[in-house]
Length: 196
Image 1 (cartoon, rainbow, N blue to C red):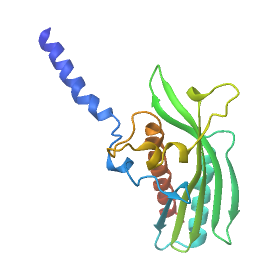
Image 2: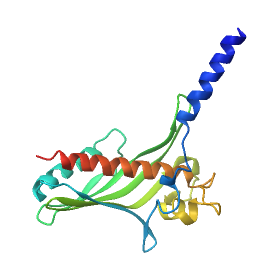
Image 3: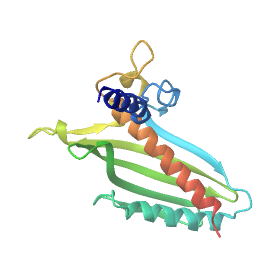
Image 4: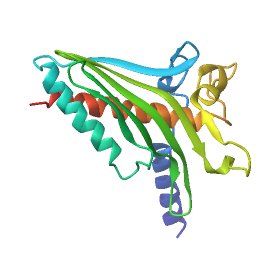
């Protein structure tokens, strides 16, 4: 029995670190959340060799529409600009940003942002901006509980003097936002590369 307990304990200790969130990975530390004129703006330019502006536009339009209809999207999702001649796609998106989900806990925020694609032949720029959150545990009657990215996930707000993420406040928001931004940008690139 003692041997069984020791074996189970060792297995748990090996498995647990695999599921832990590494908040202090360089991916989440200083400089990971860029600001432009005081506002959080994530932007990435991607090259898609061999693809025309029209092919990229159609692929990213389809991808953007899929974001609006996903299972985590909210009621305030809509395309705000769709101009093929200028190569611009813009959408206001609301979705669920999950921090932790177990059988007993579902910790999440409503996540609002604007996603913009500016498209040219063989390349495009993806931008995520105007980021804000509605977090239910912060909900107080009569008080606006809208939280902006500038107040929660910037280096100034989320990183302590030692260069690590604060244990309270914006840590989980910064972590989840960066991961979601990376996911959206990589899925958009995949869609553009597979354009026909």
